[in-house]
Length: 108
Image (cartoon, rainbow, N blue to C red; front, side, top):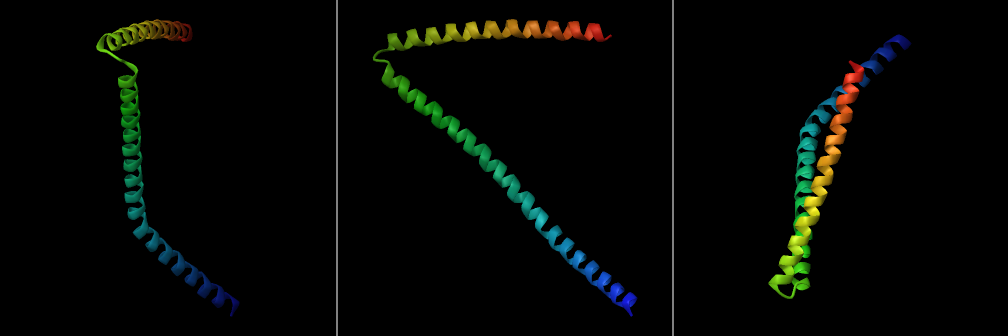
């Protein structure tokens, strides 16, 4: 009799598992769709925040410069700074590439 009851219980649990799996299979596509929607919304949010930051920066620059000459001087200064930063980064890149090359030679 216990054997029969266990067999019935195993069959019941199997049915519960099957039902739960079917429900899960129905929910998974909805979940994936919502997950993609969330990623899309997060991406759009990041782009909007970046745009807002750019607009605030532009607004601030417009208030900062009283005439075109001062604005142009600032732009030249920024270009010089960026050029200097670029040169520094290029030099760092060359150094790292040399280190990688040297390390590869040592390994081989």
